[in-house]
Image 1 (spheres, protein in one colour):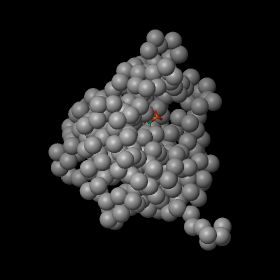
Image 2: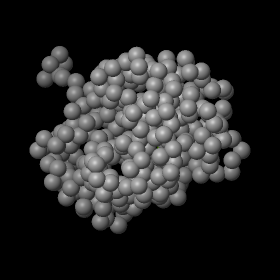
Image 3: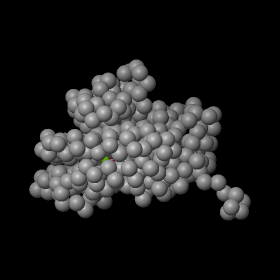
Image 4: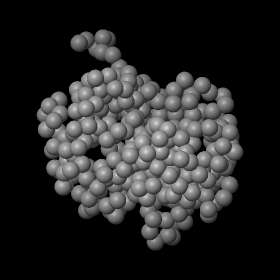
Length: 317
Ligand code: PEP
Ligand code: MG
């Protein structure tokens, strides 16, 4: 095809039998969002708000936050944008929220937990998100990182409601959240699996340590089991609340097929992976994806899970 006739991927992920799987982008600010829209993302599945303020020594003002969030919303008029509240700590310290002297930062006061040590920051962030949403047509959803219990999910939902934000959700990236997904989803409207941290915490393997990379692999059958359990929790809850994935696993085309087979309804990833994931999804029916997921789930190693999936995906050969 000549370059002028090459169409941009449109983000409308579908299986071969027409089952829709919207493909969304992970972004860190307005610049990324503009690129993601150009790459065909159907919306934003993860706005990492801490990336907007990584250099800051002090809490950004509400006005600064409104400007940062609005820049992202404006790139996706009429589309879904999932704003994650500040996920400070461990690999992403923010001087105004986190304590650099903690002995185990990944197990420390990070993500949603900073609400206990720095009260007010989350309320002000939610006020800024609500204000930015007012001036835009984006469909704004909000989610909290590092939620571990149904009680935390309920508290977060109440804070969102107080701020006038009406689609609260949580990340499922701590194993306890996957295990209690049914109760958690009674409190909020959606869940998004963060497979990067879910893998780290399931395998007890620091995601930043090279020597632990073999453990820190989202193809680990134990991680896939927790994805299955989260979807089962959503089904048991009974009102059809969506479970997406926004960890890097969604950007691996074969693993994306497994996730869809496990019942995940949206995939959010770095924009550069959208086209490759869309192309592979289009080669399998939902039933085939479910069969591939079963094969991967029953594997005894990540390599075996991956090999089993790829064997069934000739397009990746
Ligand atoms: C995750 O943990 O999978 C995730 C998407 O969040 P982050 O990588 O920003 O921790
Ligand atoms: Mg995470």
